[in-house]
Amino acid sequence: MSPFDTFVVVDWSGGNDTGPTPRKDAIWAGVSRGGISDPPVYLRNRSEAEAWIAALIEAELAQDRRLFIGFDFPFAYPSGFAEALTGSEDPFALWEWFEARVEDAPDRNNRFDLVAEINLGLGDGSGPFWANGLPNRDIAGLPRTKAGYDNPFPDKRAAEQRAKGSFTCWQMAGAGAVGSQVVMGLPVLSRLRARFADHVAVWPFERPDAQVVFAEIWPSLTVGPAPDNRVKDAWQVQELARQLAAVPAADLARMLDVEAAEEGWIFGLGFEHLLKAPPPLRNDCFALPPGVHWTPVDEALAQLRARLHPVTPVEDVPLAATLGRIAAADVLARRANPPLPNTAVDGYGFAGGREAGAHAMPLAEGRAAAGDAPGALAEGQAIRVLTGAALPEGVDTVVLQEDVTIDGRTLRFNGPVKQGANTRKAGEDVTAGAVTLRAGRRITAADIALLAATGTASVSTHRPLRVGVLSTGDEIVEAGQTAADGQIFDANRPMLLGLVSQFGHQGVDLGHVGDERAALRRRLDETQG
Image (cartoon, rainbow, N blue to C red; front, side, top):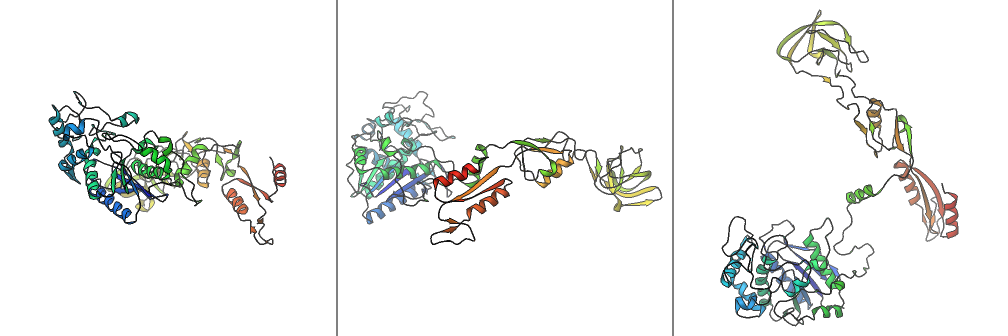
């Protein structure tokens, strides 16, 4: 059994307030108590985080629970720095030094200016801190890069030298940097330690036998990538809190047995295999591991589509028999639709649009109706056209019959009329050679209409699946039969057969077999093929 009742993991931030909406690169806290992991807590700034942590400590003390709190930033610097800055190797003197000088508000802080002063005070301003994260202001004493960098102290603590992928605490900005978290985190720890002085021990500087223990942690040491739908920091604090809570007491004691009085240590370093142990069994058969969520339906469907492939033969089927079948290959239009320019209304056709005002033009003999060969129209004339008729050569505009008057053999109407009005261009719906049906599509009645309109007489389709549905179990009886105590009517088989048919496949009813291996084998052997 763990010596702690509650485990808390806090992912820190050195930046400004991140707003009311949960997001990455913010402060997140994970809590595991009694083997149950709570949803991650979003804390938008350090002031809110400090108040939340203080309230949590007070609540745990009131319930007489032992509390382990892990903070995701170094508790100390490489050897020699604390004494050079404060005159003492005591890490808590360093905490108090930063607490006295750091200015911190939700929307601003002085971290870059403060470390620049440290650089200038310890030397010529070329180190140990580097990376000015303010894009619009240069700061004397804080170089933007490591060019010309001169660090009088080790680049990393002993812990970081062993923790593959960890960053130096001297880097103040940039991807993965932790320098700002240290500068802005130590004052908070110092205040919390003073506020709960009789109840808090800071590991590994103090014996971890107080009711509340602060420890430095690094979630990336044992927590892998976050699921696709999770914020990385939120996932990591929740998962590491679960990992810590699952460690047996004896193993936890081994992890706490560390000597690192000046530089501090990353909790769990060297014991990664113990933290990565599988989670304990749950009593709830429907419960998922902490931090794991059901796969969203859309994502599950996308995965199925990516992994499934056809298994049935391909056959050519007459167009009229393709409804509900699955196209095995793309189908191309044999000709355009419409095949020729045509009129969309009953009216009169001529060439070109007309401006506003009254217009008159002579009517040609005859008419153009659906099914007629296009013919040609003399320049300056109009011709009677009926809906669907191919436009004669020389006609590109149609005026509705309701908008004209006929005076003998003269057509009269008022403009304006836009060129191309009331007509359809050749191939306006589909051009010749265009794809009218994609492979893998289930063919609908509308698809059949388009295929027919573009000259397709048959389609290469997959043969429907034959799906056998068999019910097993002595507890199952057919609906309508007499059910003994403890038996239920078979609802799944008729439902599944209906779904198979609804999906366009051929359902094969294999009936029902009781809990008898030999009978089940015979039934399956009888229905092969």
